[in-house]
Figure 1: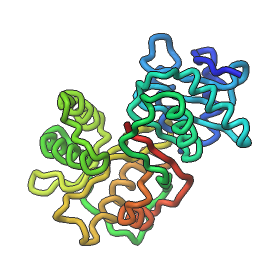
Figure 2: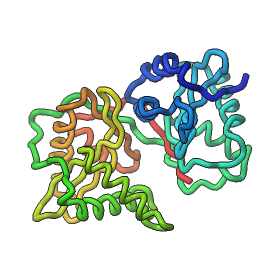
Figure 3: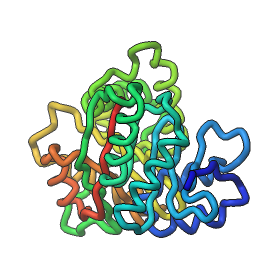
Figure 4: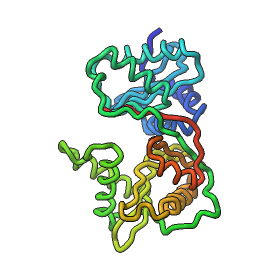
Length: 281
């Protein structure tokens, strides 16, 4: 059975599938809400099987699979159909999603095409975490929305975070203008939260994705000179409290080897709700 590209007439079915796990699926849900299914969208949403889709694949700068309950045989059939639909030429920068499905898609694609066979890094275990409340005993911190007055310092912090987390400089290869525009949009839309000391951003946490009542935090960073002093949990807790004022759930995913960050999120009230994997190209 083949996969097919979905359109606006498929919107009710797509939303129903995404609603089965709104936290894990918040990225694809957010893309649907801003026009993923419309003609001319820069990305495509595939569904499998073609007649009555039970599984989805967002295909854009990221590949993001959304799979419903199924046995191993159905999962492999869906992954093979999605690989057929994508073709041999890699256009994405990453594969991100539930660990078993994301890694299965990666294996299938790299067997089929050399363009998928040289990944920069595979992060197979990334706890997906969420919280609906911050422990009351956690002290507060002076977290507030970052404004354009602090943009230069925020931008430097964002570059440092990205380089440290992803392992590449986002400004390399002519990427400065695009990344700066992305950061400006984050600040101007009120999605950048942080602590500013003497005009310098020393902590930041962004609402990278949101849809409905779900917010996914990305880009968490604490200035190196403040690390190891017990400040991270209070700062993250304060940012989470602020974000929960306008969302019911705050989520994030984190590399399992970043044990310090995992401990911080657990102290902040986050619990593990699943496991993601990321393949970076």
